[in-house]
Structure formats: C-alpha cells, structure tokens
Amino acid sequence: MRIVTRRRRTPIVPIIPLMDILVILLIFFMLTTTFPEKRESLAIDLPKVTHLPTTQPVDRRVTLEISENGEMRLADAPVDIRGLAAALDQLREALPEAKVELKADGQISLQLLLQVWEVLTSKGYPIKDVPVRVQLK
Image 1 (cartoon, rainbow, N blue to C red):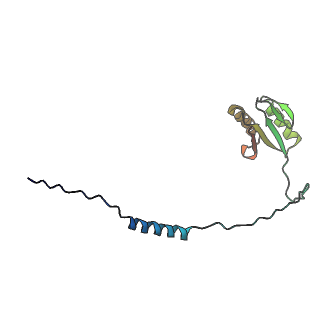
Image 2: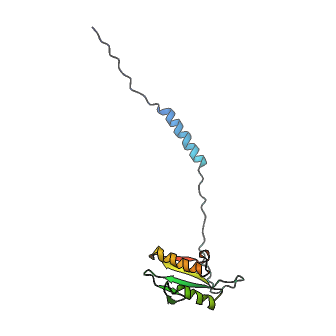
Image 3: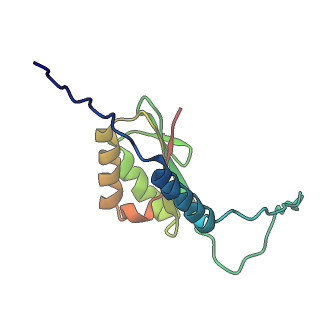
C-alpha cells in the first residue's frame, strides 16, 4: 500500500506589488512636502533709547512685595497682613491715581495670596487691574 503525501507549498509573498505601492507613496510624499525657505538674517545693532516721548499717560504703579517667609512691603515700607488695609487707605489718600502691582515669591502660601487679594478688592483695587509677577527660584 502506497500512501501519497502531498507536499505543502510554501506561501509566497508578492513583493512586486508592495514595491509599487511604496514607490507611489514615496512620489506622493515628495510632491506634497513643503520645504522651508532659507531666510538670511542680518546682524543689526539696535540703538538704545533712555527716554522716549509718549502721548499716552503712563500709569503709576506702587509695588506690593511678598517674600518667601510672608514679609510684605508696600512702596518699600514694611507692612503685615493686618495693617495692609490701613496702608492701602493711606496710599489712596496720598496717591489717588496710583495702581498696585503685586510682586510675590513663588513659595508663598495660597492662603496668604488669597488674603492679600481679598484686602486689595475690599479697598477698591480689582484683581484684574493688579498685575502679578511671581518670582521662581
């Protein structure tokens, strides 16, 4: 008795159609790619101006500084959170048109910052008009 075994054919991956697709993709990407234009830059030495006349009025800002350990200075005068309201009243009497700028350390507590904002808004300095500069170390 003779048993015939069929040989399995090894599967063939058609490489030629894959290469055709790759060539088409390559052509597509080459045609649709935009290359940035080379721009030459000039070395320009700009003049420095110390006083520039302006027609717009410049807002006078008084700085309220808060250090890392919670010490505060309003216009270079030491003040604490309890005396901040009175100091802002004195500032309003002395300079009615002056605005406040807050300069705070990055390590102060959020509670202290919120207390300062609350005092500022209660004394007529809206938060949107008080620029804040946070110094990170």
